[in-house]
Length: 503
Ligand SMILES: Cc1cc2nc3c(=O)[nH]c(=O)nc-3n(C[C@H](O)[C@H](O)[C@H](O)COP(=O)(O)OP(=O)(O)OC[C@H]3O[C@@H](n4cnc5c(N)ncnc54)[C@H](O)[C@@H]3O)c2cc1C
Image (cartoon, rainbow, N blue to C red):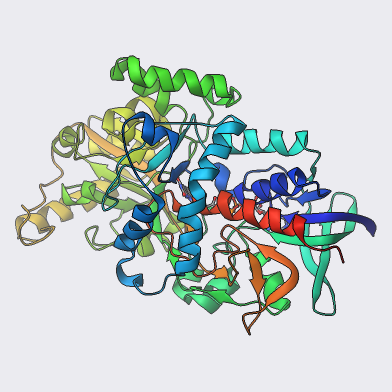
């Protein structure tokens, strides 16, 4: 067992953990960050990279006047069926501190696109990072190392060290064996969510959700589990994002993605977005996509179908097919469309998916830039062969579907036209797509100082949490609130851990 003593131990090297470590070190605390993966980043590094904030320099630059109060008032417009379950104190903390987080990120070298609208927000507040979310990891890691944070990857926290009621460090396993890290001032849990924990999903959500694969297999809820053992509790544990259908993330990295996501590159892209003709710029921006994007349900309303790896339809596409996709062979599906559907997906409002930087990606974007999930063929048989599906099976599936349509089935809603048959060449397949639990929203109960609270609502001395681990019953609906919370809560947790009286 290797023993080390430091001031602050941060568990997890995603956005929250890196932000916490930077702030703790900036405040003068000796800081150790442990990350169980071989590299830093977590879900943060897979994200689209949008942050929703009011009162930013980017908003002011394009003449938008916006305030945290307006942001606070708009957030419940997204709550839908979860209305009434929010932690308003944490919502206040988020909206009031995210503008400063944006300033801080900019100072670290991050560059954002002009804010985009996302109704029902009443002001454009969605800020996408350039060139993609790897930039967060690149700049935050650089800053953390410059401040002397000791970073140990491939090192997983296993349990909290407790002395009476106080948390005094963590026990971990790493390349050199067991590690006992004593934290004189505090431990910050920033280990992400529990979308990859079958047990926690079954316990807090349902067996059906437990059976669906996570987007990030590292999100095993270790932070939640360790804190529960220390007397903490989880709020809003049943709220999950998914099952959702996503195209699998790009497998090959084009040369542009191998460039370091430097401030200079991002600034050049930002200028390019203002001056370069969109036709020239779109392919370039699309080549920075690192993540899994969600196909629009509108594809199905307009006539596309979804088949499994055997070429069979397995669900009524208009009735949320994601849970059924999770149960298909290899969990894989393909969206099949013909030229009639394809022709409609070239312009707003018929997009294939959203896409950072270019806002919405159309069929041509996929044809040019996502060859890994795009196939086109003059016949259904040829399309099936290119997917490794038996041609007769796919042909039969399409014929049965078309026959059902001609007998009146397949109307999206009563006031929408019926779906057209899949009949006109060329034929296109988009996929593989999979069904994922993207992330979970159940977080440890925390105070506004990001202290972890016990069953009686009292802080557990020495224990802090942020990001998905310390979400505290806060609803982060819409886009861009999760990353805002990760960086903002991480910063506050890191500062408060560093300021705690030493044990
Ligand atoms: C595809 C996708 C796109 C998204 N896009 C957006 C977006 O554009 N905007 C937005 O706001 N939100 C987005 N989100 C959500 C957002 O990315 C996450 O909520 C956020 O990144 C969580 O940050 P975190 O620091 O809490 O967790 P993470 O970034 O996951 O970091 C947790 C880290 O802890 C490590 N860890 C886990 N257990 C241990 C252990 N025992 N010991 C040591 N380390 C451990 C993990 O490996 C991981 O690196 C997206 C999510 C997905 C899946």
